[in-house]
Length: 229
Image 1 (cartoon, rainbow, N blue to C red):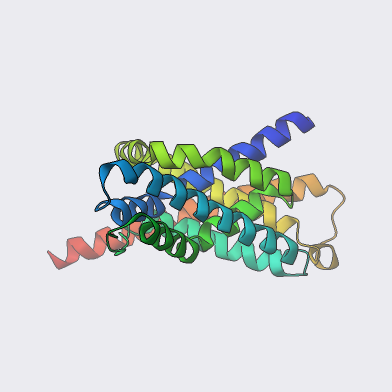
Image 2: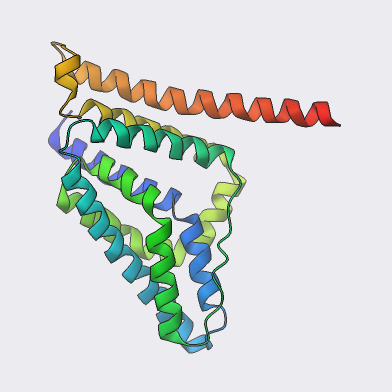
């Protein structure tokens, strides 16, 4: 794999993951700004989203530094698998952020709620960036205008084409496998001649595990519903 293709793939992962996991963030922005005067709404959306992304960048950079600790990447990979499965089996949870009467209270509400809700984004982006500060900042900044101006359209597309959500969850599982393979403690327990083969195997395994578990849970829930009728 060429270095240019690898960088392009990592940027794609960061942007797609951020978009996929930003549905609730887009909803909370709309809720917080819905009572603002029309001329202030655009500023509320822009400043709130920008502040949230700056906080997300800071959190992600901290997580990246912590990833050097042995076993933390394995732990992060397990959390990422859970996030990916939850994305498929849970219904969208609408934030109960209240509408704010003025611009700065709306911006503050957006930033605070975004900081609380962004753990999944932070873990996933830190994994996809593979420790690159430049990729983290670039990927998130590129995502900002897309989230702000295209979130509504994106949500409609995902509702119309559920396969995209499954593909995104599979990507999260793939990234979880990559993260686990990069844990500094792994060589102590696994001795392989071809590290790239191990990374590929864990990535395939992560994606397959997410899809298989989510499908099994969906089938079980449907069976329970059929039994209760």
